[in-house]
Length: 368
Image (tube, rainbow, N blue to C red; front, side, top):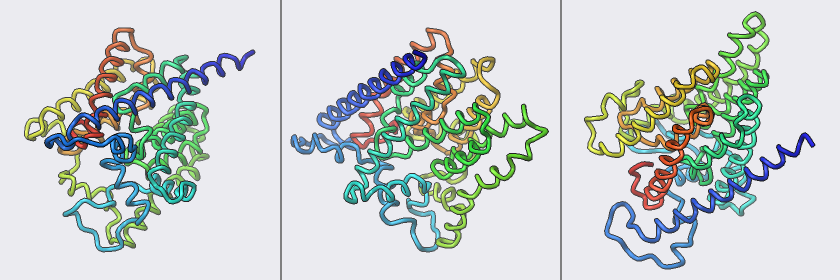
């Protein structure tokens, strides 16, 4: 009898996942069919084009990940005057390449499978964590499924894998399995650059509660640094620049990276509308998490603040609806907040989920 509530929640969670994916596909298909791409004059699309999933969803970073999985990183001297695959971390493309054969070499289908499989596993782990620690299991995963960037979890982007690794680090730290938490954080660090911040979750917990025996976790910590060290060594040997994944950001108009740069230069850019929206989302995220400082562990608060500082270090604030997926404390904090905050968060995110999907499938990039 003890497993009955869990089985019921898993069933409802799976149903919610399917429902939201159908909703996302429907919105994306409609927007792709009736709106012009890149802001150009609308050109009619045939029924075959409209139902072509690849035409609708294979946009922006999706093509970069597939290019990296197929060709690998450039084997030449590093330059930062043009966009290159150096700007993308390797673990997700490695997964694409490894499982591509299951789909006849179709990396797009492989990516769809990997992203959705990782997301389902992540949702289960997040449910376990939030239910055991905060008694908000179903509410937390429901918030993730309707958030403005939720569709990134099901397309050829690294978000599904990153959220899975993030959930594992938080859950393993909750279970005091700090060694494995460090190792998973090491893998997350070569999935998205924000993954480097996950080390603070087990680290702070160890310092607070196990300082006298912290030496026991040193081997696991050293081992967790190997993925990033191997990646940087590879870059150094192939292009002569171990920090190519950072320096290539110059090609994306990010000449110098420092915390809060996006806010400092907010009024100096042309696309002020979308930047203000992204900035608003960051303020909302930080405000909600910090408002729950008495209900959340210190490590959750520190992680969120560092994540915020790193993610706003570009000259332009963009992609907030996508980056927020990795801030697990946000969704837990909302589930612990008042009904007013919950309702505001839900309505705002459902609205911008439609807006962001439309921007993505029409290749406009306004809120992407």
